[in-house]
Image (cartoon, rainbow over all chains, first blue to last red; front, side, top):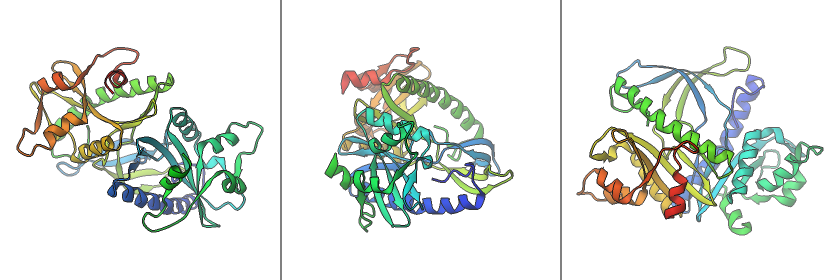
Length: 185
Length: 185
């Protein structure tokens, strides 16, 4: 994701932001497809912004002149599919062997755990840039690593192959992640 | 709601914004209560903002220096309760006899219709300031007026009494709207 107040160099952030945009825009296009074809109602949440100062240069147009990005308290995407509550986030990685859990905010993991406990379908979608592969990874797999205090703080690519579900890139829709839900939930 | 680029005088908007804050903050407190007591996972979505210009005055802190409020494409609140997808918006009115439908964005009504068609629980919560009464109004009631091209573009208070469900203001939680769902869904 792209929250520029993270502790990284600006240039690195800009690159990350661009990477994030691609997967996000593919998911947005997929969600539009779902919406227009009456398959599901899934939207991206707006990026949370703390507004500090607003000016009114023209008659009716408020202009925000000072604001900051906030850490999100939940994930970016949620909605409904066949009566089920769906909740997920998307991440891109340039890693070769292992996906570092620090790519996900602790709030987001706890939020997905909550959703799952309440009967929702909670997961992340990860794009492995180097292999150009997309995986649907259920929260249960993430929690196995997250809750293991002694364990690794990253999820090996092999576990994506074993416990995740590959989403093939396509055109209509681009990343048909709901197909995974049809097959495995 | 409080989107300052609507066609209204600035002062009127500020008043509306303040009014909105009260009901919204009561709902936020209620949602925190639900979350902390493991009853439901329902969050407010961030207000959508179009960021135009960002500066980097300090090392790692992005400062947004030009941005504008956007019209929301969905409602403000959604989440999960007992496995069900929940979606709603909250509105305040100073009206005495009838709630004008122009208080709700057309997108929001169509979004709630979609949600309902997909098996979710879709509604609005309206605070009638003059009577200090809160009502849970199912989307089906709103659509009866919205879809009637020849009909009234406002919903009479009497219809809130007849077809809506009153939510009593309380302390823990403040506005226990999930109780309505337990009773009527």
